[in-house]
Length: 339
Image 1 (cartoon, rainbow, N blue to C red):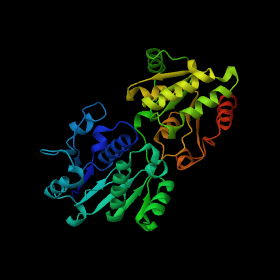
Image 2: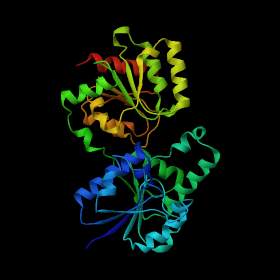
Image 3: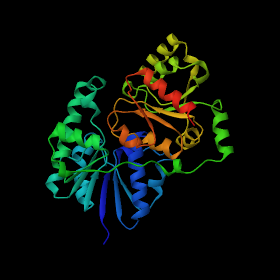
């Protein structure tokens, strides 16, 4: 029997960091291991990129977009399309399900990645916080099952929304298979030359926001002896926080050690595989896919001992207090010197 399964694909087609990567990896894996099912992707718009083209070309996927207005379509108008497609199951891949879905009787699953806005409200506008809280709570209360991407997120769901534990299943994330394939020496060298990178460098991949703690890396870098102050290659966007980072690095005399680049997604494995250490001392993550990308690249990982990050890293990483620059510096020193 062929099952008709629908997915909220907004992030898949329009987000090219964590939530988008989760959606694309999950759907590619489903199509590989369960190719006989019928998959429906609902999205208000489609960005055609090398990462999304697979889903547009594959006959396994049926892409649905709004006929007219995109405003509020995901929350309300999409229910009519879902009923028309006669789904057997709907999966909200990023925190929400349509408001009218429970009344249709169609079973639903929602993936909750994190509740960052509850921990860092200052990073969100008041209206956005209220909207997120309403959507997240509705999805948790009205879906048939909840997927939490870590035990940490599961505990947050239970704590903030009073959801019974038996309704929540922890299913860890994976990462793109490109990080599981070793690049040739020529491919690595080509990427390094393209961005003018030295042979030895540290790597940071993530949005440039306070929570992810690039400032802590800068503070730690200044504490290291000169021979261990390797350049930090920074891959990520965020103009306001970047200004703070640059100002602090200038004050500490290490600005020349920061190399900001904008590589293509396909170039990331070659960067990970050449880095001496991957740095990810975030204060809070729902999971932390970049840690997996580094581990599959066989690159030593330094990350935080907080929230979900010890889960994502497992036993093969160095865990530090992200608020302690000296601890970050000591972790870097150990990873660079202890074979």
